[in-house]
Length: 173
Image (tube, rainbow, N blue to C red):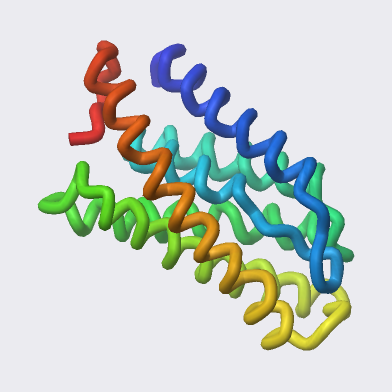
């Protein structure tokens, strides 16, 4: 892994960190997780096991540090790596559509729903949920999926332009 890769992943996750830290918790103190969008962008930009692993673990730690959800620290550490490698596998299985904003937006939507389900399941096993699972899923996870899909639709073309103008090993094509 090159330093330019780590740097760009770091910048993406730093932006996600700020967003995750300033967004207030909603129902049951669960937050809209914009950090997921940045994790998905990093996975699309650097689709290899090592980069995805570093991104997943870093995202899990950042989410754990900034969560306001009861028991969210451990749930984030479980959720982010699993979600990252599921999205990585899905992304790699659709090589024909790499560079397509629709694929990126779909991965953001699906990934957010997967992440939310894993997060809530882990939190339910580790602690008591502050509200029913379905209520948290419908009032926080589903709107977060919509927000992340819109964000990916805006950010993905910007990242394509940046990678085309640079000498990155992996370019969004």
